[in-house]
Length: 301
Image 1: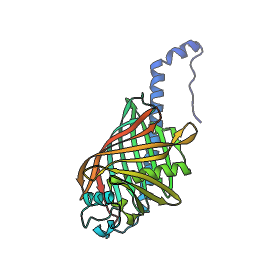
Image 2: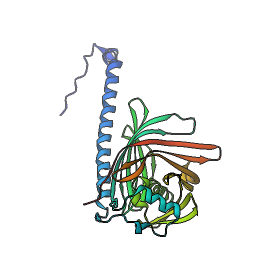
Image 3: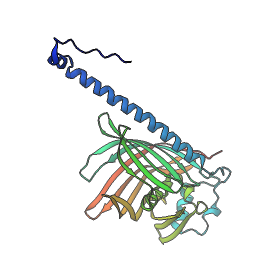
Image 4: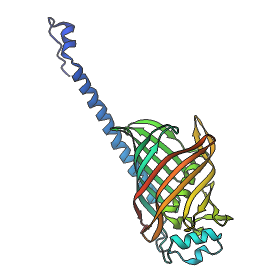
C-alpha cells in the first residue's frame, strides 16, 4: 500500500493551495519535460545506431577493385574529363562513406530565417543507400532531430522536436523513394567512383559542358543533369522534376544543387561546400547550405 498524508482539517484547501507554489509546479514540469526528452533522445540514438548498422551490414564487400582509365572509355567528353580530374589511376572504389556537415537549414518559405545545422551521414554504394542524422536548432536549446534515409530501395524522413515529438514525417512511397535516390545520385560527387558506369550510372551526352546521369535501383529510376565548369569539376546538378512535398501531396519541381571549393580527400578531388534550392515560379528557395567538415571513405573489409 502507498500512504498518502492529507492535510489537517483546520488547514483547509486554501492552505493546500498556498503550500503548492508556482515555483514548485514549474520545477516539476521542467523535470517531467527533461525526462521525456531524455527518454526520446535515448530511443532515437538506439534507432539511428540500428539503421546505420543495417545500412553498412548490407554493403557489398568488393574492396579490391580500383579505378582505371578503361572505366571511362566511351563516356561523353565532359564526363570523361571529370573523372580524369577527380580520380587517379588505381583509386580504390568507394564502398562506404561517413561524413560530417556544418551549416544552415531553412524551415519554411524564403522569408524564414536560416537555422544552425549539424549532421552526420553514412552511405553505401552497392546497394545505394544513406542515413542522414541532422540536428537543426530552431531556437536556443530547442533542437529538431531529423533522420532522412534511403535503404532497401525505400526512402523515409522523420523529424522530432527535442528528439521526442514527431513534427514531420514522410513514409516510403514512389515519390519519396525517387526523391531520396535522386539525393543519393547528386551527393555521389563526394565519393565519385559511385558515378562510374560500373556502378550502374548511365551517362547521356548533352553538350560540351553537361551530361545526363541516370540511375536505376530496385524499380526506381532517376536522372540528373550534371553541369561541369572550366576546371572539369561538377559545378551544379539539376533535376527538372524532383518531387516536393506540398500540403498532403507531391509536386514535381525543378531542383538545383551547387558544389564549390574542391579539395583533395583520400586521393579524390571533391567539393567541401554545397547548397541546394527549389526553383519555384516566384523565385528560388535555397533551403540547405553546408560545409563538409569530415569525410571518411572506407572500403568494406
